[in-house]
Length: 484
Image (cartoon, rainbow, N blue to C red; front, side, top):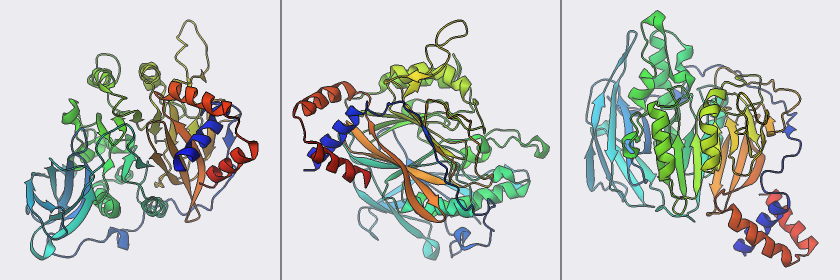
């Protein structure tokens, strides 16, 4: 019954020319009652320090290898180095295995970080709950995580997508709503703590507070990290001129497992998805390491095993907001043709503090001397989605270009988060959830069709049409998806 329902839903979308029916887009007129765009005070309970001497804090996990059989567990001990060991097992309170990692610390101006621990736990079984313990004695803390299912083309999986989060009351609303969504992993599109909005020692202090703020999620669910402009922290007036210093010390990535030369860009495979993380603020033109790496990584994508190809970046390539308009044009000129050629399904970005979704369009037919000047519908192109609406201190970007460009499908200046629920190799359900005055409201949703399966899907849809489904029956199906 469930399979038939999906087929009927998909058939109805084929009749509407898939997800690329470029009609007039929609600009939401919703205006939310905005909570103050200011950081939560440091004495608030969301930043509470764990009890016990030198207790581990700011705990977070991320995928630790290419295929999802490892995690990197990170935490900070504030007073002394302590142990860099993780005890873990499949039964709560019974830890059969131990992994040991490394410890580091750093200075930023006159701020001295705590002792930052990173431990790779590998050789894990797929689709298994693991419990882990860090710290010693009365200060030890226990958490859990679940490994992803074995890689395969029809493996369902649900991702959350968050960007530009910060540590305001709006950020808290986004985080709490995300944690109610039933997702398994976060795809984070950059701009974490907004600590660079501070000066001197307060920069490091606000990195620490953010780590404690998100721990209630990051200690249990992997967050797949990408860096934004607020991670650069180029502050020569403080003699701090090394880009991404705090970010790179605190948030490791599995870049070596995909032969990347930098933790700023890398790739992972998880369930039925191949996920590529790019760095908008690292060199990416021809001959640079990121350019050469991406060229090779795209060749490695096996759509028979991982049919869903997802790209994360911070700066959006297509954006119709006055904020940061056309800042992504240089990366578009370099990589868009590759994205179209390899049939990337969806590209998530942040940076703009609003929400926007595009149709499938491209501008690869234009060059400086000839060709079409404007983006045109392109069924091989990705859907571009901007989710820079996590809730940060800088507030919303409320001024969109008028009239709305033809490539823009939906846009709204509100805080929120997204979910992408992969069903199988053919389709996924996408939702953007607005933080509506403290409530989670599903606002924009659609069925995302897999690019590689599109041709097969067309044949299936033709067979469905020949069955001459009764109009009232199809209508009832559409009502059910509308209420999804």
